Amino acid sequence: MKLKKGKFVVFDVPEFAAWLDSQQIHRYISLVQNHHTWSPSYQHFKGDNHFALLAGMENAHIERGFSEIAQNITIFPDGTVAVCRALDKIPAGIKGANTSAVCIENLGNFDAGKDAMSAAHRDAIVQTNALLCTRFKLKADTNTIIYHHWYDLDTGERKDGLGNTKTCPGTGFFGGNSVEDAQAGFIPLVKEAMMQSSRGSSVEPENILYRGKVSAGVLNVRNVPDLNGKVLRRLHKGVVVAIYEWNGDWGRIHPSDPCWVNRNYLEDA
Image 1: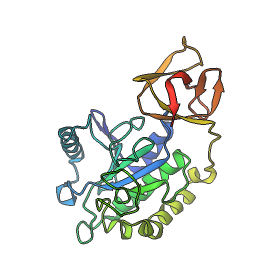
Image 2 (image 1 turned 90 degrees about the horizontal axis):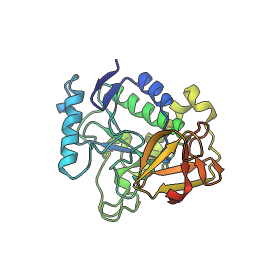
Image 3 (image 1 turned 45 degrees about the horizontal axis):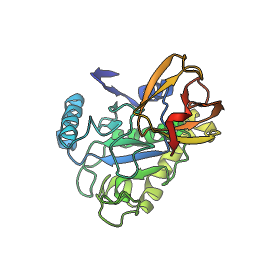
């Protein structure tokens, strides 16, 4: 059922899994953020207005000063998964936890007593988190899968619900929004989904030699460790990359594919 309008692409979960496997992502990812949109909520979803809701969210985010829609991924009540901001772009989801994160917005208001999460939505949220953990070789726990509620809105520090916080992703999200709630009601489901998937059978950390942050305005990714190499894509300032191999001043930023950047334009992450 893949649907596309402009940069927004809406998949069912199996299509999203295949798409994610096919992507060459150069940004280092260590966190998966979970949010609820609060508004729009279930009452705004009509079953066929995915793109209108995405456009509305993007307009609201631009009005708040963002360059585009804040989240990388939106998951809808019918179980569909939309790719919004490119995965190689840093999201604008949680102050203090954006640089190495993928941001998921789950459409709805999941504070206690509000939207009752549909079975399709519940399954898609679990499966999407599992797919992202597997794709980026993350252990599913509360150090990698995080909630907005755990971060202080003023300082960007993780305080696990203390300080000035939002309820996001909702006081009723998979049993609650605390760290303990996530450990009891959400993380085990993600782990089970990873185990049931063949993709989860060989999740091992890669041999990362270095993590660096792009210090230049734009950094070219080349197909060989040489200034004459073909430019594959460009990474923007602030993006964090992992180095898996050094070749002189060049670092390979993909576990296996020839994607090289010059270390002179990186700073310690």
